[in-house]
Image 1 (cartoon, helix red, strand yellow):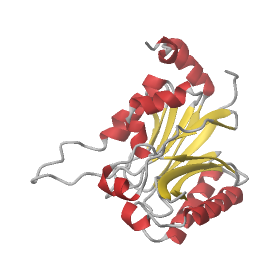
Image 2: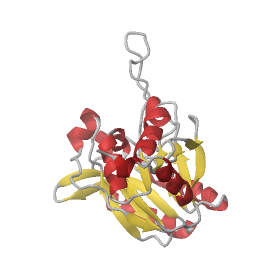
Image 3: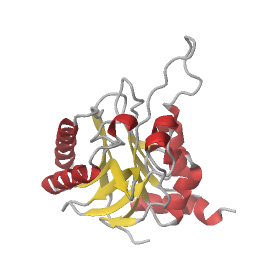
Length: 263
């Protein structure tokens, strides 16, 4: 592993408006401009943000056009951008994530493998290929989408493929009360506990971008290979920023090399 300076990553936490792609793209552009002013070289946005997260309502969106516009945002701001869109191929629809570099070139596109809930499974097909690992400013990067990261084998496979940073657009809602009592599963545990655990056990950085409240859990974060949430949001709209340092990753793998010592 060669040494390089840290990659400053900004995670955008906001809520996409279903059916208002123009407004949502403007929000991404605004956040990207702010992130660049703060030194970020990569911006990660939430799941299906351009469409707004509503699987039934957005399944027929023109993802190709949205990706053209996202590429233009990346190129205009001069920053790498991870964004999630609908991808239609060979009669199937997928929830996808794309990584654009600062020139607007799409370096990789990934189809969400683990669909969540009846709506996603009704309107979308699960992806069938693991994410590619691509180089971004000297850092090997892979993509996941939302529910993917809740499966330890998914993150482990990305790390074993050489990824040092996993970027995860997500849409984790808060669950309503059941019979007047809080839902048994508090979804805030996913960004608060699950994501840092995945980063620790697979010794990888994770940039996790959720929609903002009140309907979504928020708590977007950047977690490091020691399982620390080195940058974390609350529930409102905000920009969460932190550094991905290969020296930290190297130290974590030296301290306890889970990847090399796995059974």
